[in-house]
Amino acid sequence: MNSNVMQFGADTAAPGAPNLGNTSLDMVLDVATIQAINMIAETMAGGKVAIPVHLRGNKADCFAVAMQAFQWRMNPFAVAQKTHISQGGQLGYEAQLVNAVVSNLAPITGRPDYEFLGDWNKVLGKVEERKSDKGGKYYVATYTKADEEGLGVIVRATLRGESEPREVTVMMSQAYPRFSTQWATDPQQQICYLAIRKWARRFTPDVLLGVYTPDELSAERPESIDMGRADEVRAAASTQAASKTDSLRSRMSSKRTGATAADVPNADAMIRAIEGATTGHELKVAVARIDELTSDGDRERVRTAYQDKIRTEKERSQQGTAVQAEPPQQTDSGPPQLAPYETMLSRIQQCNDVEVLAVLADEARAYPETERIKLDQAYQDRREILLGA
Image (cartoon, rainbow, N blue to C red; front, side):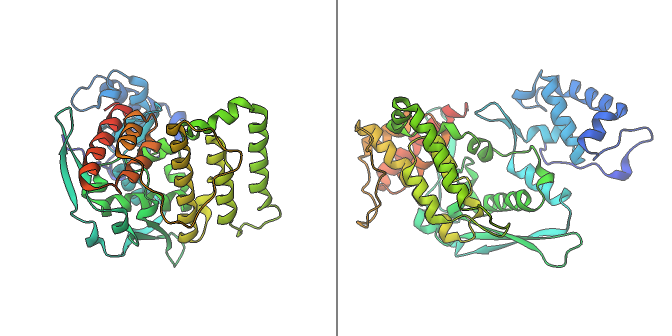
């Protein structure tokens, strides 16, 4: 089946046909539209090849997909093929579909324009085909994190009524988690999908209201980060943990007291909050405003501190050491030494959170090639299990 998303033209509607492209409220209040969507939902629910497994026999979910497709003026069967069920049980949409929606429905003049930053020849085409234990094939990137440095894209689009385009810059260092294997085979296309979605979230949020891609659905589970033995602090002193969370929020909000809309959070304060976090919830609060930082360098520093914190707590958990009273201190002795290969392999195989698994996979890229290949295989196998593949 051709899964390309098709659009209905406004001039193709037959007399008496329901109005397409209305708001959700208008559609609910229009009897003819609801009846038409209901009939399509019944047909979709009875489908087999033309409908993904998670929608077969499920009229209610088919109705929701059909209503969304009508509002987007798209073929509901094509839209259905671009949906999935997240690990948390939520209905998500593929990045390709979201990109099409933004390009066609956002109040912009013309099409979005993309400008690539850096030398992409360092990563393009650097991919290997692997075989999973289940007999299937998948692709992994062979380029390193160092190869990604400086690579990014600027997306620009002009809102109707404005003369100058608005832009958003996205670097490869921001492109996490990377659930799609297309990040290995076509990273430029994937970062364009990510960039236009970020542009829409910032400047035209109404276009994507309630519509999420796989990485966004995974990121919206703040309690799922495994902080290892650090959680014992909360179990041993729950009242202290609650007060620390309140204190953390107070410190972060105090930076904004009396501030204007142009003020932005402070990267150093966010890093201190990350280092002082003792629970997964406190860590999530500490990085909640990272996208508001105006400097790419500040965002990278905060992101590095976040990953270091997770790595530190994971190592403490594996080594069976008690949580120290003082927050972990940064040192200038260079990058941390790699954990033994067997330890990293065990962490990947026992990981129960997709977001943490993505961090471990990123760390695994620093290992020698023979070990990295085995860790990549373990990552793919564990990811298939967690995502129910």
